[in-house]
Length: 470
Image (cartoon, rainbow, N blue to C red; front, top):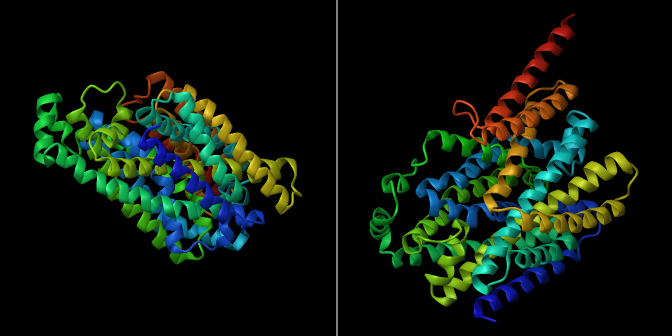
């Protein structure tokens, strides 16, 4: 057993231990779901950043840097742009509603604002999407274990699932918030120390540019922030920015804040951190392209840098940082699975009289069931970006317009919202399959789906307004 494996085992045991210690204070569903609405600015920042720096923003983003170059920044950068809107516009309004009406989940908001039918539809769609993005985190863990220990992808996915489920199911948001605080420290220190050392190995930016010019076709595009072109930049923005405004997992963490100031500052700091961090994995991926141009899979770029281009102590810390990134986002997704099934489906449709103890029990079992299903999905899906795109597409198309319109308008529009979700999701899937993801006239399938949803909601407002005047 090599040193890297021992470090990851020790770190995993530490995460599980911290999670179980924090879980000792969890007694009710309020503890589990919204941490008694006592998250300070620091804890909210930590748990959000830990959730947002996951497989897509580390292993996936480094893979994009390896393949696309500097313009891979737009993958995580788009998430940061969406987080700014969540911090200062959407988040404070949702927090006030959550505190006023004791909301636990995004589904609670959808039912209060529209109807139980809308809540059930979204919960079902997001359960499928969340399984996909959770699978993406487990794939990233598997790639790490493949590079450092030679473990197969299926075994790596299973081990990653066990670690995450072990600490989350005990304490929910309370455990996640405290574990995430530790993970953020490890992540940021590992990545920020690894970047200058890796760049120094290739001779700094000038040396990197020289290597790239010799090995990569269209090197000028590879070294440009806009090298992928406007249409693909817009595709990243429409896929990711709305998701980071209305993602149920992020909204629920916002519900856990102690006040509106904690929402603005905590989420705002998270947005700034994402905008800066977006460069780090991309540059590491570019360094891998300069030194290891023939990798069989672009998503092996980041763990390869950690093992081959850094001294052992720093490589071990950096691998722990990457491992933290995947595990912390995985616990946020287990959070979504647990709350969606227990509150949005179980209590809403099966047992409206469910007690706090019932919800806590079902939430824990839902996290275990969802985690197990995601392990199976991770074994079958080909890549991290493919897995994440399923989730981000569903969230953006199904939730972005209904949630924003619900905040901007006081009219019910329950039937209109239901129709908008069904039609826009179906249209997005149809266009994606029919055009192999290309869309029409430079408009991506997700952008088209959001536009269709907006048109339907506005039409509903106009029709209802005319009906009310008669």
